[in-house]
Amino acid sequence: MIYIGAETILSPNGNTKDCFRKIAEKKSGVSKITGNGFNGESFYCSMFSDSRPDFNTLAVQTIEQLLEKSKANLLTEESTLLIISTTKGDLSKGFENAIVSPAKFLYEKYKLKHFPFSISNACASGVMAINAAAAFIENKQYQNVIVLGIDMITDFIVYGFQSLYAISDEPCKPFDSERKGINLGEGAGAVLLSANKDVFTTTPVCYLSGSSSNDANHISGPSRTGEGLFRSVNKTLSASAIKTENIDFISAHGTATVFNDEMEAIAFNRLNMQHIPVNSFKGFTGHTLGAAGVIETALCITCMHENTLLPSAGYYTKGTSIELNLITQAASATINTVLKTASGFGGCNASLLLQKIK
Amino acid sequence: MKISGCCRIHQNKVLVNGKKYFASDNSQHDELSMQLYRFLKTEYPKFYKMDLLSKMGFLATEIICQTTSAISKFADDEIALLFANSHSCSESDERFNHSFKVEKSPSPAQFVYTLPNILLGELAIRNKWYGENLFTLLPAFSAEYFSSQAGIFVPQKAKALLCGWVNLFPVTDVFVFFAESNSETAQEILDSKEIEHWYNNIK
Image (cartoon, rainbow over the protein chains, first blue to last red):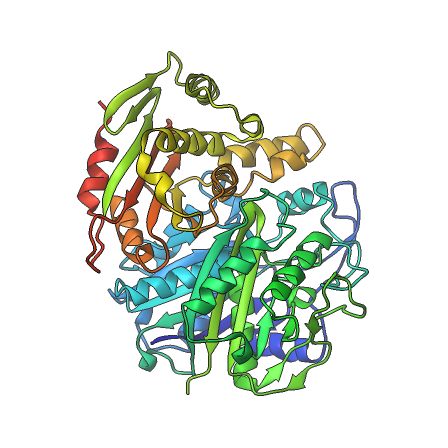
């Protein structure tokens, strides 16, 4: 059995508890930033406002909060590994060192026994990092793996997504007919995976299985048939004893671009999952890129503990060729089993299954 | 597990399974990649659009596909792509940065290459590989890393592995190898010494 818990979020919407409560109340961390686009455009994103932390400070604060929910000295044990999930790392350290530099900083600061791995697999990084962590434990290479997902908003990222015409000029609307693109977000999330339930001081859930698949179709456009996502979810299901009818909630990727959300709707329909309650957290957190999969998994675990389905922001009218069962208001529900998915540039797709401890 | 084919590109030399395969008179990345592309006689127009990281990974993989017959016997989702380097896609980052800072026009064509796993997407598209794919950042080449990942992926998540170290700085340092199961036993180990041997074999 692999346990996952000590769920931790540090985002413009606050910590894990604040984040959960605000989403339940439909209060978004996304707000208007005036004049910071490449040509002075205004755009919407979720950004720390006052005292914006630098990359390493945010990483440390997030790890410290996770450690409060786990056994003392866990981080520096021989059997513990740290995995960092990020797309761009800390660009202030220069392009060549942007990702390895924070890993080295944390390695030295905490005198870790193993140099942290960093996974950079576009917007699927977080889910893939959690899957990698679970695989290390399953293979008995480590007992405990901490996964830290972290990315910050920079001009580099804003101008890049602007150049692709992917940024919405209003709060994003995943899966809605009026959706116009993403809202970027920044922040960090962390989870602890372990073979040992006793290392958690809060209740964990079970990690059942996970996988990734490539679309083998296009480097920056999602597959029109949802092939990679379809394959990944199928592999994740077949690696567990879970059947479609056992899934209580899907935390989708839901970036609110026209093509991504349509791809997901097609894939979920091919999987016969179109009726399962589904949301996208992106309207509340913004798209936090390499942090997204970790932050959203942390939110999924919180939903399971709170027996609450959290809503999707900005959904009013069916905007995909296949109608999904979008959650529009927070609702009480028994959530035993959750499917988390993510997709990203490079045609990558990843998924994982969580289940409450029986 | 065993390594059934490997390609090593070091500075201006290319070795396949330890034997000299190609040498360029120029160790500049652009020149080397174009000379090698022409040498392979591959017709793949998408190659010209790729960034250097993708080009190098693509060329080494093309060579392995041409020289390692075992690779063709696997189904489209049975090969996991496990690639790593130390500097991510810094060369594309510089180019995109230049496009908005100096040319005052952010280039979408360059921005899409500012993620290192785009290389995996290029390999998947070229070869119609739908399997697992993971891009990891390590401070330096580590045979132990690939050995440990091999133990995780095979047989649970894949039947074979295409592993790659694609570093461009300070010099071209590329090592791509194909590894598959060599027994029916449940214990699947890819010896890090075997990986190390082929990586260090650059004479």
